[in-house]
Image (cartoon, rainbow, N blue to C red; front, side):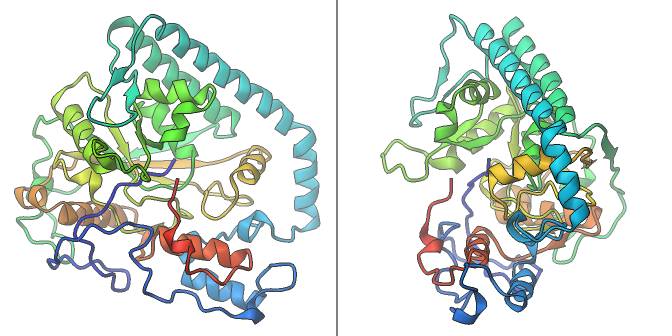
Length: 414
Protein backbone atom coordinates (compact mmCIF):
# COMPACT_ATOMS: atom_id res chain seq x y z
CA UNK A 1 0.00 0.00 0.00
CA UNK A 2 2.13 2.81 -1.25
CA UNK A 3 1.45 6.45 -0.58
CA UNK A 4 1.31 8.78 -3.52
CA UNK A 5 1.71 12.17 -1.90
CA UNK A 6 2.77 14.71 -4.48
CA UNK A 7 5.87 16.83 -4.06
CA UNK A 8 5.92 20.59 -4.31
CA UNK A 9 8.92 22.55 -5.53
CA UNK A 10 10.91 19.49 -6.70
CA UNK A 11 14.65 19.93 -6.48
CA UNK A 12 17.04 18.21 -8.90
CA UNK A 13 18.95 15.53 -6.96
CA UNK A 14 22.68 15.70 -6.56
CA UNK A 15 24.36 12.54 -5.33
CA UNK A 16 22.97 11.46 -1.98
CA UNK A 17 22.45 14.98 -0.60
CA UNK A 18 19.33 17.00 -1.18
CA UNK A 19 19.80 20.72 -1.62
CA UNK A 20 17.58 23.06 0.35
CA UNK A 21 18.12 25.93 -2.07
CA UNK A 22 14.87 27.50 -3.23
CA UNK A 23 13.41 26.39 -6.53
CA UNK A 24 10.33 27.51 -8.45
CA UNK A 25 7.14 25.68 -7.55
CA UNK A 26 6.02 23.35 -10.28
CA UNK A 27 3.85 20.31 -9.46
CA UNK A 28 5.41 17.31 -11.14
CA UNK A 29 4.04 13.80 -11.18
CA UNK A 30 6.39 11.46 -9.36
CA UNK A 31 6.18 8.92 -12.16
CA UNK A 32 7.19 11.29 -14.94
CA UNK A 33 9.47 13.92 -13.50
CA UNK A 34 12.60 12.16 -14.77
CA UNK A 35 11.38 11.35 -18.27
CA UNK A 36 14.07 13.40 -20.02
CA UNK A 37 16.91 11.55 -18.31
CA UNK A 38 18.17 8.44 -20.13
CA UNK A 39 18.37 6.18 -17.08
CA UNK A 40 18.80 2.94 -18.97
CA UNK A 41 20.25 2.43 -22.43
CA UNK A 42 18.91 -0.26 -24.69
CA UNK A 43 21.45 -3.03 -24.98
CA UNK A 44 20.44 -6.26 -26.63
CA UNK A 45 23.45 -8.05 -25.16
CA UNK A 46 22.18 -7.46 -21.63
CA UNK A 47 19.36 -9.94 -21.83
CA UNK A 48 19.38 -13.56 -22.70
CA UNK A 49 16.90 -15.31 -24.90
CA UNK A 50 14.77 -16.16 -21.88
CA UNK A 51 14.46 -12.50 -20.88
CA UNK A 52 17.00 -12.64 -18.03
CA UNK A 53 19.83 -10.14 -17.76
CA UNK A 54 23.44 -11.28 -17.86
CA UNK A 55 25.59 -11.34 -14.73
CA UNK A 56 27.50 -8.24 -15.83
CA UNK A 57 24.33 -6.30 -16.55
CA UNK A 58 22.81 -7.47 -13.28
CA UNK A 59 25.78 -6.21 -11.30
CA UNK A 60 25.60 -2.86 -13.10
CA UNK A 61 21.85 -2.58 -12.51
CA UNK A 62 22.21 -3.43 -8.81
CA UNK A 63 24.77 -0.67 -8.41
CA UNK A 64 22.71 1.88 -10.30
CA UNK A 65 19.47 1.07 -8.54
CA UNK A 66 20.94 -0.07 -5.23
CA UNK A 67 17.89 0.97 -3.20
CA UNK A 68 15.83 -1.79 -4.84
CA UNK A 69 18.43 -4.55 -5.23
CA UNK A 70 17.88 -7.81 -3.37
CA UNK A 71 20.88 -9.43 -1.72
CA UNK A 72 19.29 -12.50 -0.13
CA UNK A 73 19.79 -16.07 -1.29
CA UNK A 74 16.72 -15.85 -3.55
CA UNK A 75 18.34 -13.25 -5.79
CA UNK A 76 16.77 -10.71 -8.18
CA UNK A 77 12.96 -10.85 -8.33
CA UNK A 78 13.16 -13.84 -5.97
CA UNK A 79 14.01 -16.07 -8.94
CA UNK A 80 17.69 -16.74 -8.36
CA UNK A 81 19.26 -20.18 -8.51
CA UNK A 82 19.00 -21.68 -5.03
CA UNK A 83 21.57 -23.89 -3.35
CA UNK A 84 20.46 -27.45 -2.60
CA UNK A 85 20.06 -26.81 1.13
CA UNK A 86 17.76 -23.85 0.49
CA UNK A 87 15.69 -25.88 -1.97
CA UNK A 88 15.34 -28.59 0.65
CA UNK A 89 14.29 -26.11 3.36
CA UNK A 90 11.81 -24.47 1.00
CA UNK A 91 10.32 -27.81 0.01
CA UNK A 92 9.87 -28.88 3.63
CA UNK A 93 8.33 -25.51 4.54
CA UNK A 94 5.87 -25.71 1.64
CA UNK A 95 4.32 -28.92 2.97
CA UNK A 96 4.52 -28.11 6.70
CA UNK A 97 4.38 -24.54 7.99
CA UNK A 98 3.02 -22.89 4.81
CA UNK A 99 -0.43 -24.58 4.87
CA UNK A 100 -0.73 -24.00 8.61
CA UNK A 101 0.11 -20.33 8.31
CA UNK A 102 -2.26 -19.81 5.38
CA UNK A 103 -5.14 -21.32 7.37
CA UNK A 104 -4.31 -19.32 10.51
CA UNK A 105 -3.90 -16.07 8.58
CA UNK A 106 -7.26 -16.64 6.89
CA UNK A 107 -8.92 -17.26 10.25
CA UNK A 108 -7.43 -14.07 11.69
CA UNK A 109 -8.60 -12.07 8.67
CA UNK A 110 -12.13 -13.46 8.86
CA UNK A 111 -12.21 -12.86 12.63
CA UNK A 112 -11.36 -9.21 12.31
CA UNK A 113 -13.70 -8.74 9.38
CA UNK A 114 -16.50 -10.16 11.55
CA UNK A 115 -15.64 -7.71 14.32
CA UNK A 116 -15.70 -4.80 11.87
CA UNK A 117 -18.98 -5.99 10.35
CA UNK A 118 -20.68 -6.19 13.75
CA UNK A 119 -19.35 -2.81 14.90
CA UNK A 120 -20.50 -1.06 11.73
CA UNK A 121 -24.01 -2.53 11.64
CA UNK A 122 -26.66 0.20 11.43
CA UNK A 123 -23.90 2.82 11.13
CA UNK A 124 -23.48 4.97 8.05
CA UNK A 125 -19.90 5.63 6.92
CA UNK A 126 -18.42 9.09 7.18
CA UNK A 127 -18.41 10.69 3.75
CA UNK A 128 -16.35 13.58 2.48
CA UNK A 129 -18.73 15.40 0.16
CA UNK A 130 -15.89 17.43 -1.33
CA UNK A 131 -13.80 14.37 -2.18
CA UNK A 132 -14.85 11.75 -4.66
CA UNK A 133 -15.38 8.28 -3.22
CA UNK A 134 -14.13 9.04 0.30
CA UNK A 135 -16.11 7.12 2.90
CA UNK A 136 -14.92 5.33 6.00
CA UNK A 137 -15.72 4.33 9.56
CA UNK A 138 -12.57 5.84 11.05
CA UNK A 139 -14.43 8.29 13.24
CA UNK A 140 -16.87 6.01 15.00
CA UNK A 141 -17.10 6.79 18.69
CA UNK A 142 -17.93 4.95 21.89
CA UNK A 143 -17.81 1.19 22.27
CA UNK A 144 -17.70 0.62 18.51
CA UNK A 145 -14.43 2.47 18.08
CA UNK A 146 -12.97 0.90 21.22
CA UNK A 147 -13.72 -2.62 19.99
CA UNK A 148 -12.46 -1.92 16.46
CA UNK A 149 -9.17 -0.47 17.69
CA UNK A 150 -8.54 -2.98 20.48
CA UNK A 151 -9.31 -6.03 18.35
CA UNK A 152 -7.44 -4.55 15.39
CA UNK A 153 -4.26 -4.01 17.37
CA UNK A 154 -4.42 -7.45 18.96
CA UNK A 155 -5.25 -9.39 15.79
CA UNK A 156 -2.61 -7.49 13.79
CA UNK A 157 -0.01 -8.66 16.27
CA UNK A 158 -1.42 -12.19 15.99
CA UNK A 159 -1.08 -11.95 12.21
CA UNK A 160 2.55 -10.86 12.58
CA UNK A 161 3.12 -13.89 14.82
CA UNK A 162 1.56 -16.15 12.18
CA UNK A 163 3.94 -14.60 9.62
CA UNK A 164 6.90 -15.59 11.79
CA UNK A 165 7.55 -12.28 13.57
CA UNK A 166 7.59 -13.86 17.01
CA UNK A 167 9.60 -11.09 18.65
CA UNK A 168 9.71 -7.44 17.66
CA UNK A 169 12.60 -5.38 18.95
CA UNK A 170 11.45 -1.84 19.79
CA UNK A 171 13.73 0.94 21.01
CA UNK A 172 12.94 4.54 21.88
CA UNK A 173 15.62 7.00 20.93
CA UNK A 174 16.14 10.21 22.94
CA UNK A 175 17.59 13.01 20.85
CA UNK A 176 20.23 15.21 22.43
CA UNK A 177 19.03 18.72 23.03
CA UNK A 178 22.47 20.25 22.54
CA UNK A 179 23.61 19.09 19.16
CA UNK A 180 24.75 20.77 16.00
CA UNK A 181 22.13 21.01 13.24
CA UNK A 182 22.49 18.71 10.23
CA UNK A 183 24.40 19.87 7.18
CA UNK A 184 22.48 22.57 5.35
CA UNK A 185 20.22 23.21 8.32
CA UNK A 186 20.40 26.43 10.32
CA UNK A 187 19.87 26.78 14.05
CA UNK A 188 16.50 28.40 13.40
CA UNK A 189 15.50 25.34 11.37
CA UNK A 190 16.48 23.17 14.32
CA UNK A 191 14.39 25.26 16.67
CA UNK A 192 11.37 23.00 16.52
CA UNK A 193 13.29 19.88 17.56
CA UNK A 194 14.58 21.60 20.67
CA UNK A 195 11.06 22.08 21.96
CA UNK A 196 10.18 18.44 22.37
CA UNK A 197 8.25 18.96 25.57
CA UNK A 198 5.48 21.13 24.16
CA UNK A 199 2.11 19.45 24.75
CA UNK A 200 1.06 19.39 21.10
CA UNK A 201 -0.43 16.25 19.66
CA UNK A 202 1.37 14.95 16.57
CA UNK A 203 -0.72 14.73 13.43
CA UNK A 204 1.05 11.81 11.78
CA UNK A 205 3.64 9.09 12.07
CA UNK A 206 6.35 9.20 9.39
CA UNK A 207 8.11 5.95 8.52
CA UNK A 208 10.41 4.46 5.92
CA UNK A 209 8.62 1.97 3.68
CA UNK A 210 10.12 -1.51 3.33
CA UNK A 211 7.28 -4.03 3.12
CA UNK A 212 3.53 -4.55 3.35
CA UNK A 213 4.40 -5.95 6.78
CA UNK A 214 4.90 -2.30 7.79
CA UNK A 215 1.12 -1.94 7.68
CA UNK A 216 0.54 -4.80 10.10
CA UNK A 217 3.10 -3.45 12.53
CA UNK A 218 1.62 0.04 12.59
CA UNK A 219 -1.87 -1.40 12.97
CA UNK A 220 -0.70 -3.36 16.00
CA UNK A 221 1.17 -0.38 17.40
CA UNK A 222 -0.91 2.76 16.82
CA UNK A 223 -3.79 1.68 14.54
CA UNK A 224 -3.15 4.64 12.25
CA UNK A 225 -4.93 5.52 9.01
CA UNK A 226 -3.14 4.93 5.71
CA UNK A 227 -3.27 6.11 2.14
CA UNK A 228 -4.57 3.33 -0.11
CA UNK A 229 -5.66 3.04 -3.71
CA UNK A 230 -9.39 3.28 -4.36
CA UNK A 231 -9.75 -0.36 -5.38
CA UNK A 232 -8.71 -1.52 -1.89
CA UNK A 233 -12.03 -0.23 -0.54
CA UNK A 234 -13.85 -2.66 -2.85
CA UNK A 235 -11.87 -5.78 -1.94
CA UNK A 236 -13.66 -8.55 -0.02
CA UNK A 237 -12.89 -8.51 3.70
CA UNK A 238 -9.97 -6.09 3.38
CA UNK A 239 -12.22 -3.32 2.04
CA UNK A 240 -14.29 -3.02 5.21
CA UNK A 241 -11.20 -3.32 7.41
CA UNK A 242 -9.50 -0.47 5.52
CA UNK A 243 -12.60 1.69 6.01
CA UNK A 244 -12.56 0.98 9.74
CA UNK A 245 -8.92 2.10 9.77
CA UNK A 246 -10.06 5.39 8.28
CA UNK A 247 -7.89 5.00 5.18
CA UNK A 248 -7.65 7.74 2.57
CA UNK A 249 -8.62 6.22 -0.76
CA UNK A 250 -7.02 7.73 -3.83
CA UNK A 251 -7.44 7.46 -7.56
CA UNK A 252 -4.88 9.61 -9.27
CA UNK A 253 -6.46 9.14 -12.68
CA UNK A 254 -9.63 10.93 -11.55
CA UNK A 255 -10.25 14.15 -13.47
CA UNK A 256 -13.42 15.31 -11.73
CA UNK A 257 -13.42 18.93 -10.62
CA UNK A 258 -14.34 18.14 -7.01
CA UNK A 259 -11.54 15.61 -6.47
CA UNK A 260 -9.06 17.23 -4.08
CA UNK A 261 -6.20 14.86 -4.66
CA UNK A 262 -4.09 12.92 -2.18
CA UNK A 263 -2.27 15.88 -0.67
CA UNK A 264 -5.45 17.86 0.03
CA UNK A 265 -7.16 14.98 1.82
CA UNK A 266 -4.06 14.04 3.79
CA UNK A 267 -3.51 17.65 4.90
CA UNK A 268 -7.03 17.73 6.32
CA UNK A 269 -6.59 14.38 8.09
CA UNK A 270 -3.22 15.39 9.59
CA UNK A 271 -4.63 18.69 10.84
CA UNK A 272 -7.66 16.94 12.27
CA UNK A 273 -5.51 14.39 14.13
CA UNK A 274 -3.31 17.24 15.40
CA UNK A 275 -6.25 19.21 16.77
CA UNK A 276 -8.61 16.41 17.86
CA UNK A 277 -7.36 13.72 20.25
CA UNK A 278 -10.19 11.38 19.26
CA UNK A 279 -9.35 11.49 15.54
CA UNK A 280 -7.18 8.68 14.13
CA UNK A 281 -3.60 9.65 13.33
CA UNK A 282 -2.23 9.35 9.81
CA UNK A 283 0.54 6.91 8.95
CA UNK A 284 2.69 8.32 6.14
CA UNK A 285 5.29 6.64 3.96
CA UNK A 286 6.72 9.76 2.30
CA UNK A 287 9.13 7.82 0.06
CA UNK A 288 6.13 6.82 -2.05
CA UNK A 289 7.35 3.25 -2.62
CA UNK A 290 9.21 0.43 -0.90
CA UNK A 291 12.98 -0.09 -0.80
CA UNK A 292 15.25 -2.91 0.32
CA UNK A 293 15.49 -1.24 3.75
CA UNK A 294 19.06 0.07 3.41
CA UNK A 295 18.15 3.38 1.78
CA UNK A 296 15.95 6.43 2.28
CA UNK A 297 14.45 7.82 -0.91
CA UNK A 298 13.54 11.52 -1.29
CA UNK A 299 10.51 12.40 0.84
CA UNK A 300 7.40 13.73 -0.86
CA UNK A 301 5.99 16.78 0.86
CA UNK A 302 2.24 16.09 0.85
CA UNK A 303 2.22 14.88 4.46
CA UNK A 304 4.23 17.88 5.68
CA UNK A 305 2.07 20.61 4.16
CA UNK A 306 -0.09 20.71 7.31
CA UNK A 307 2.92 21.84 9.38
CA UNK A 308 1.87 19.59 12.28
CA UNK A 309 4.32 17.71 14.53
CA UNK A 310 5.16 14.16 13.45
CA UNK A 311 6.60 11.02 15.02
CA UNK A 312 9.52 9.59 13.00
CA UNK A 313 9.76 5.78 13.06
CA UNK A 314 12.41 3.59 11.44
CA UNK A 315 11.76 -0.05 10.51
CA UNK A 316 14.48 -2.60 9.76
CA UNK A 317 14.13 -6.27 8.77
CA UNK A 318 17.33 -8.22 9.56
CA UNK A 319 17.52 -11.49 7.64
CA UNK A 320 19.82 -14.37 6.78
CA UNK A 321 18.01 -16.22 3.97
CA UNK A 322 14.93 -14.38 2.65
CA UNK A 323 14.56 -10.60 2.96
CA UNK A 324 11.05 -9.45 3.97
CA UNK A 325 11.63 -6.25 1.98
CA UNK A 326 9.08 -5.88 -0.81
CA UNK A 327 11.40 -4.09 -3.21
CA UNK A 328 11.48 -5.81 -6.59
CA UNK A 329 9.69 -9.11 -6.11
CA UNK A 330 6.15 -10.05 -7.16
CA UNK A 331 3.56 -9.91 -4.38
CA UNK A 332 2.36 -13.53 -4.48
CA UNK A 333 5.89 -14.92 -4.65
CA UNK A 334 6.91 -12.67 -1.75
CA UNK A 335 4.05 -13.84 0.47
CA UNK A 336 4.80 -17.51 -0.18
CA UNK A 337 8.53 -17.16 0.51
CA UNK A 338 7.88 -15.05 3.61
CA UNK A 339 5.49 -17.65 5.01
CA UNK A 340 7.99 -20.41 4.26
CA UNK A 341 10.64 -18.75 6.44
CA UNK A 342 10.22 -20.07 9.96
CA UNK A 343 11.49 -16.96 11.75
CA UNK A 344 11.34 -13.35 10.55
CA UNK A 345 12.82 -10.38 12.36
CA UNK A 346 11.66 -6.79 12.77
CA UNK A 347 13.48 -3.95 14.52
CA UNK A 348 11.72 -0.68 15.31
CA UNK A 349 13.36 2.60 16.30
CA UNK A 350 11.00 5.28 17.59
CA UNK A 351 12.18 8.86 17.72
CA UNK A 352 10.63 11.63 19.86
CA UNK A 353 7.91 13.85 18.45
CA UNK A 354 9.42 16.33 16.00
CA UNK A 355 8.01 19.84 16.34
CA UNK A 356 8.65 21.90 13.20
CA UNK A 357 10.03 25.42 13.41
CA UNK A 358 8.14 28.30 11.84
CA UNK A 359 10.47 28.14 8.88
CA UNK A 360 9.72 24.46 8.38
CA UNK A 361 5.98 25.10 8.63
CA UNK A 362 6.17 27.57 5.77
CA UNK A 363 8.54 25.40 3.73
CA UNK A 364 7.27 21.78 3.62
CA UNK A 365 10.21 20.75 1.43
CA UNK A 366 12.62 21.85 4.14
CA UNK A 367 10.49 20.10 6.78
CA UNK A 368 10.49 16.83 4.81
CA UNK A 369 14.23 17.00 4.14
CA UNK A 370 15.05 17.66 7.80
CA UNK A 371 12.96 14.69 8.94
CA UNK A 372 14.70 12.53 6.34
CA UNK A 373 18.15 13.61 7.49
CA UNK A 374 17.19 13.04 11.11
CA UNK A 375 16.08 9.47 10.40
CA UNK A 376 19.21 8.73 8.36
CA UNK A 377 21.44 10.15 11.10
CA UNK A 378 19.74 8.28 13.95
CA UNK A 379 19.98 4.99 12.02
CA UNK A 380 23.54 5.41 10.86
CA UNK A 381 23.57 2.75 8.14
CA UNK A 382 20.61 4.21 6.23
CA UNK A 383 21.85 5.80 2.99
CA UNK A 384 20.02 8.74 1.44
CA UNK A 385 19.47 7.98 -2.24
CA UNK A 386 18.22 10.35 -4.93
CA UNK A 387 16.33 7.79 -7.03
CA UNK A 388 12.63 7.08 -6.77
CA UNK A 389 9.59 5.28 -8.10
CA UNK A 390 10.35 5.98 -11.78
CA UNK A 391 13.78 4.35 -11.46
CA UNK A 392 12.23 1.42 -9.62
CA UNK A 393 9.96 0.74 -12.58
CA UNK A 394 12.93 0.87 -14.93
CA UNK A 395 14.98 -1.47 -12.73
CA UNK A 396 12.23 -4.09 -12.50
CA UNK A 397 11.53 -3.88 -16.22
CA UNK A 398 15.24 -4.30 -16.96
CA UNK A 399 15.43 -7.37 -14.71
CA UNK A 400 12.65 -8.83 -16.82
CA UNK A 401 14.70 -8.20 -19.96
CA UNK A 402 12.80 -5.12 -21.15
CA UNK A 403 15.17 -2.29 -22.02
CA UNK A 404 12.78 -0.32 -24.22
CA UNK A 405 11.30 1.74 -21.44
CA UNK A 406 10.26 5.22 -22.57
CA UNK A 407 6.64 4.48 -21.70
CA UNK A 408 7.33 2.90 -18.31
CA UNK A 409 7.80 6.25 -16.63
CA UNK A 410 4.34 7.42 -17.70
CA UNK A 411 2.42 4.54 -16.16
CA UNK A 412 0.32 5.46 -13.18
CA UNK A 413 1.24 3.71 -9.96
CA UNK A 414 -1.41 1.98 -7.87
